[in-house]
Length: 608
Image 1: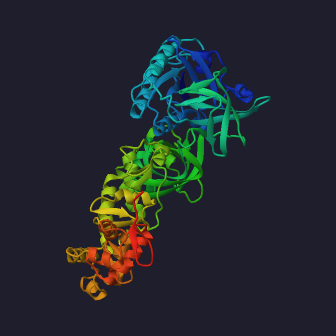
Image 2: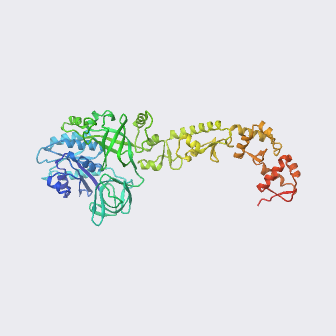
Image 3: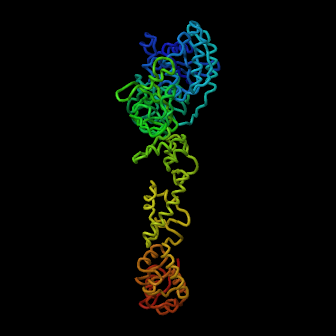
């Protein structure tokens, strides 16, 4: 299925054209039919000559119903722009076109109606020229008459060509369906309708709504019950919902969108506003932001140039790259003169256009601006930003993959740790900062074996201690919850003292030096304690310190003696002193390497 919205000035024949193309009545309300004026959105569908099914979203043209028009056009991928031959380009023609330009609609065709009442040529030339100046560019044009049927065959063929050129949506894309109607059906309950631009909805699916989670009980497409529907499509969903949904809310894939009430955007003035908005300072401080069928009041905070922060009256599910339309709903005290009044002079249509700009979302999770000058710095950072993962990481530095996906950006490259992704330049800088932090910590705490990981996390301002360990690379290492330098995990002076002790004991490895000699080697009580914590030294008793592994080596040598053996025999075998041997043998007993036989004798235990 394909979906096309109508656009154009009030009473230029949009509904009539839809009626004759589809044989259906798009005006749903009795009041609409009595007054000949579309007030609400209308829907009708037909089958084109190619066999493709086409649904129309018929929108009101009256200026009082611009918000309703935007609700219908916003989710549609293409537009049929209608201009009457006998009246030509009119105020709402301009306003609708400016809205389409702001929304980024790039596919459409021009239908000049009432060709039986006036020469369609002048109106067609004027309208085509104006469309060409907008984002629609050069579109196919057809002169028609809904009353006589003139040109309808050509219009159907043109619609076939239009939909054939539309991009193919991704059926696996995350769902975001803006609700444009919500009502209750006796015996069924809550029903909502909307245009599904991409993705797939199916019976039994759970979707997120502002009020919580809803479950789809049934799916209907063009009045036909179906098990599922894939965008682009007009769908009606029967929901099991905790609260009644409303127009302007969206049904979305859970976890696939960022619900946010603050966004940083790039402003793109449209229509005549380009001439009057050299930067964001020219916008009123309060505007209405439109996306899909949502219309939300927002506060505009200029950051610099064309960059602004919008604070929305309620959270919306957004991705970076989304375009919001900014509209001045009317003059109010304190907002200054309506910019739209000045735009009307350019277009020559006499009435001001209230659509001021499009706002492209650059960040759906903007950081706080607490420092003096932070807004200006933020504007500089975002001036060249693009809606992708790389730009988001340059801004946020670190983001989880799930957060990137919820902002509409597939993560690029491998994560640096777990699900964390990092800006490459920032990550490289963190490694340098970590090395400096470890050096400073060692200088301030010379007897500690290394910098605790959590202290390093706080020093670097990181949200997860696993990010710290992922930064560690030789000559740094992680041991016992600390970041150590070198293989010993000791501060350099202590490691050097341990090496001096090893060298001194090379000839007689079990003759532990006295405390005074240890101090001369640079191993005072604190240094010895630090070396013992890292396993570089073995303390067998107070004042008796040997290199690590001396106990296992001693047991190996004692095992060569006739069993059992005495303290004196052990002392001679290990070439040591009684001061060392007594506590060493007691240590071997505690370690299970030796055992007592009687008051004088021990023996080595046989390994099991």
